[in-house]
Amino acid sequence: MENDMLDLGFWQLVAAYLFIILLLIIVKLRKIPREKEIFIATLRMTLQLLLVGYVLMYIFEQPHPLITIGIILFMVSFAIFNIYKRVDMEVPRRLKKMVAFSMIIGTIASTLYFNLVVIQFDPWYDPRYFIPIAGMIIGNSMTGISLGVQTLVEQMKSKKKHIEAALMLGATPKEATRKIVNHSFDSAILPTINSMVGIGIVFLPGMMTGQILAGASPVIAIKYQIAIMLGITGSVAFTVIIFVQQGYKIYFNKEKQLVEES
Amino acid sequence: MLFTLENVTYRHILHIPTLHIEKNKMTCLIGESGSGKSTLLKLFNKMLSPTSGTILYNGEPLTDIDAVQLRRNVSMLSQTPVMFGETITEDIEICFSFHEKEPPSIPSIEEMCRQFYLHKSGDTKTDTLSGGEKQRLALARMMLLQPNVFLLDEATSALDEKLEKQVMTTLVEQVKKLHASLIYVTHSLEIAHHFSDTVIDVTPYSLAKER
Image 1 (cartoon, chains in turn yellow, purple):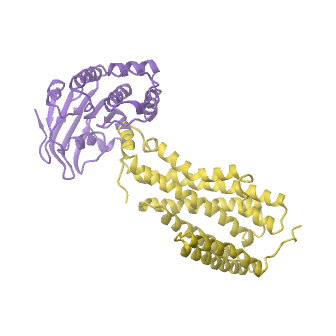
Image 2: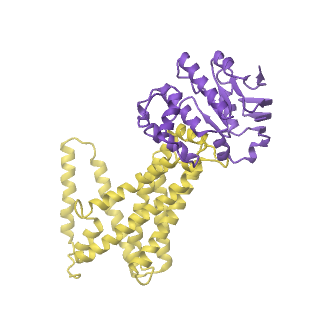
């Protein structure tokens, strides 16, 4: 069954683009000024995927531990900068360091555990497994942390009086910010939990669909998907916990006073 | 002495060459807006640290005392009360969790609220309370926490004149009963003279004079 993979021919792919052309016509007729964005996004997606396809092909043919490690580090760095860009508020410098720290520790530890303990492929650096799995873990953690940072920064500002009032009565910074920290954790982890609840009924996840289309048995695809979902949830939670448990501390000095961060 | 200040400055807001605040007394801080009264209160419980100078609490430099432990003994309430819980009981329970103490029973919470003229049951939602009711709850809450020093920054400002006097009377009685000290800021000279052993006039960047 694994060999039943249906390759897509050139004209079939062209037919897929007809969807976008149809969309462009509709948008034009309805006078919605988005043709340019749709066109550029389609072009970028095509070029990026073509490029990554060839890069992956090259890497898969010549597996090397340093190349795998290099790619993972590149992915984590890219994710960290993406978080800074996504949060539409000024993120204090020390909080940025905390984002980088939690992303590096959280995603690398989760990826290693998942690859070495759960899937156990050989050699350990096999890019065919290592890179896509790391990609899923890093990508989801990035989304989680972005939401966590946004909530933390916003609430530390809007609930300043609340925090101060608690400190004045003798609360530790941890107690004074407990609600904010929990709220940041919730906002980071909820999308992942929601996707676990809806999976298989509301939607079939991309990885599983891809495997099935590529000829894998649905049972194998599902087993992988379950493992991946658990891995993603675990790594998002782990990364976000490291972040929120350390992140609130940057707003206090050693005298447990609330300080203005920039 | 409860507090002794020597050459204390805070940025360009406050300069106090010397100031003594006595234990077990009611001390009132008066002065124009922006004179640094709130800043001075915050210096007493390390919500702010002085730019220069020394502050002693019971003879010990504040710099040697852990900020959280200090604030559990020298607690402060600001003009705009913050509610921590959804109901009166929950609000007080949360404040007790700050001190890692067991919360009081619901009847004793309701009794303390009554003493501060807040006749509400423990399950009353805090967001239904008016500004004045919130101030009274915040005072009752602080009283239940029993700190050694009460720092109040215009904590009765939302009350009308008659109720403010009644609440201040209860407050002073309770503070005396606890053998505690009260340092408070008010705009009302009448309150200041009626309920204080000492009145301190705080003027910006100059000597705080005792009257």
